[in-house]
Amino acid sequence: MSLQTEWIHFEQDGVKHRLYTSRLARAKTPLPVVIVIQEIWGTDAHIRDLTDRFAKAGYLAVAPDLFAVEGKRPETLTEERIEQVKAFLETLPPPAWHDAQAREAALEQQPPKAREELRATYADVFAHLKLFPQLLEKLKAAVSFLEGYELSKGQKIASTGYCMGGALSLQLASSVPSLAGSVVYYGHLLNKEQVATIECPVLGFFGELDAKINAHLPEFVSAMKEADKSFTYEVYEGAHHAFFNDTRGAYHVEASRDAWEKTLAFFKQVLV
Image (tube, rainbow, N blue to C red; front, side, top):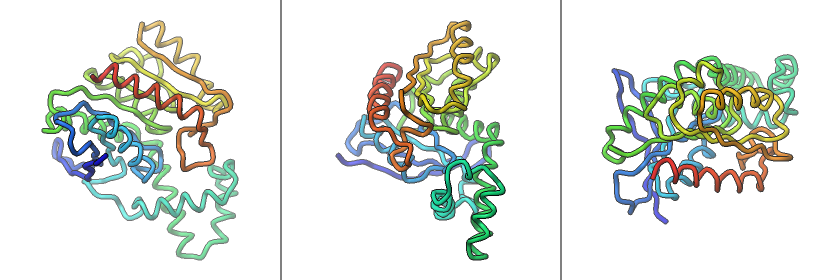
């Protein structure tokens, strides 16, 4: 199965953007689109692998690089620097990831240059959790581009996102009436005002042991029902946050297998 993959650059409203694209080399274009929205770690190997998996299912699959500024990654947010942070955090117990005191104590054990680079990249990566309006604008720019792109022009567009990307997939559905469908994997959910502007079906996947995210699920379910919006979801027994990421310790194969099948069925329903 031969894939055509490439990074492309495009300009929208005077702003340059960067986009990873993947499709079957022999597929007749234009194709319906699946936008794959990154976790906090960016368009890393895992996200690109997911994008390729959707391409193999017959879609033009794209992953916007939300860390790019004018089409290029800042030095602190290069994939190499982010991989160094991920490797550092894997040496710590998960509760210490966001415990500044514990994290700093561990950083002090690093060589001076590595310590400063890790500190700067960690700060810049997690700062994006407070930049959702700017990230959403990048996603909306991608949708506008794809609507006129020769490989997808005239075709339907849907999104799927993971953790931070899951929240953004929902926000995209709330902001872009033309979106055909939205999938959220364990992302922060929307309030009633945001729910009111959703026009497309929504599919959600959550881990039973992800208490922080799940605490808001009943309210979201109620808001979607009251607004007469389409929302189907699964909560997987024994699964943690990030259960779909097969590069992390939280990976849950049974939950992931079921979620993958249901995601493909959803996209077949809303895109084809």
